[in-house]
Length: 164
Image (tube, rainbow, N blue to C red; front, side, top):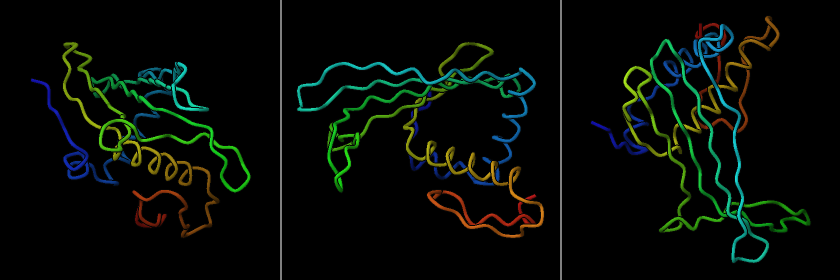
């Protein structure tokens, strides 16, 4: 039976410590060719709003050791807007009640079964934060004891002595 999860469900289930461990192991599995990660695919269509485009994005990846493959899709309206004299592409929240639409579908690599459908919000924030923390772990000078963070709401201050 397919689980339908909310961001609240996911936030209760994911911990930063477990996410760091699983992400690090997943990168090791990918380096050993036991995991896959397809580059992001973008599709665009014209939109009726001025200077706007419909954007559909998909990316998938799986880890053999965990027996799962995930597919992430986003469905967005993007619009060119001038902010502080700079032209930027901004996502417009038009997906019902002023929301954005991003979903993750989780499949069993053993049976092909759809295991879960969930929003990508909290998962994506955690993935970005965990990936950044792992980069710091492996790229920071070894004599650094503490580092701050920028833009990673999901992660606490990384302390080399307590994180390992």
